[in-house]
Amino acid sequence: MGIKVKLSKRQINNIIKDYNIVFENIFETKDGISDTTYVGIDKYNTKYIFKLYEKSSKCEVQNEIVLLNALSCLPLAKPYTNYNNIKMHNSKVFALYSYIKGSSPILIESSHIVQIAKFISIFHQKSKNIILSNKTIHISQVLKTYLKNIIHHKDISEKLKCDLLDYNLKVHNIYFENNCIIHGDLFPDNTKFNKDILTGVFDLSQACKSNRYFDIAIIINSWCFKNEILDFKLVQKLLDVYNTYSNLSITIDFLRKYILYAAFFYALKRLSNSLKYVDFDQNTYENTEYLIKFRHIEESNFYSKYFYII
Image (cartoon, rainbow, N blue to C red; front, side, top):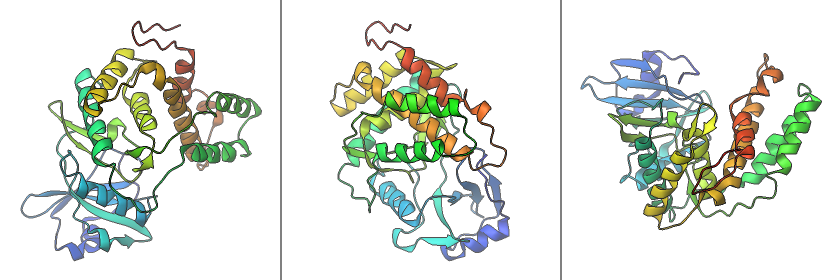
């Protein structure tokens, strides 16, 4: 669900009173898991997105607004919040955006892959000259921090610690050049399609100067698996389109190590977040989504032409 903090219509209208917008109705959103997001409708039947950020800093939201304003050629929300006038509610940043019609895809088809590949290719190119305030992310350092916190946690078994340390040895020597601005969180639930046409991509609060191959690998992990099996045809379609719009020649073979790294990164990220819950059960974690994907990627032979799987 897209609601972390329950708010009434009166509360939201009080929060946004400086916008000269009054909601006649509000609705909870169903997409997204990180922030509190409501759809608000004014007396003219215009829809808006009200977002209360749970973790993002003021700087991160400012960077999101900079990108949205600069990349208006892409299917992105329009920010009503001014870059220089970011405000807080109970120590949390909030912002107001235009509403995007459509819904997040559940069953991923080739047509979805084509459009998301075109989007991210243009996003990487168009954003390369945009300067974000203090936003360069060193992926390997973030992963090390996740791993260190997990390994030293009292609720993690020796077996899981050993497994994670073993997995880390298989990805620890990957070099990440900071070569473009990445979305950093382009999962299906951060997109909307209307009649199979991409109408919008949202949640750019994680966007930062980083590595394009990692961004593509995130998309492959979240869009190209079917029943915990990597669909190589979808991966190839993604790369064909991306390469066409970027004038590059990235291959599946080349990306394998990044796909493996991204799976491990999100396995650690989700485990790190789960450790904060009182009812954390590490036994159920050992077979969660991204560890399963990591093992599958590791056991697969990546041949661009034949798509053999062991």
